[in-house]
Image (cartoon, rainbow, N blue to C red; front, side, top):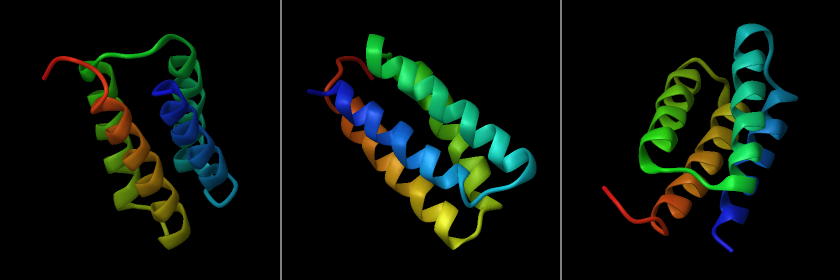
Length: 87
C-alpha cells in the first residue's frame, strides 16, 4: 500500500533522530511525526515537497549516518509521490 512508504520514511527519520542532536534532532523528529500522521491520511505533492525541502536542508548539515537515513526517507517519499496524481 502506498501509505506504507510514508510510514517507512517516518521510521527512517526516527532512526536518524537517535544519531542527531540539537536543532537537527528536533527538526527530524517533527518531520518524522508529521510523516507518520500523513501515512494515516495521505498527502498531496505540495505538502510532500515542503517536507523534502526541509529534509534537504537538514541533510546538508548532517553526518554520514543521519544523511543516509534522510536519503532513505526521501526515497520513500519519492516512491509515494509516484503513486499520487498531479504534478
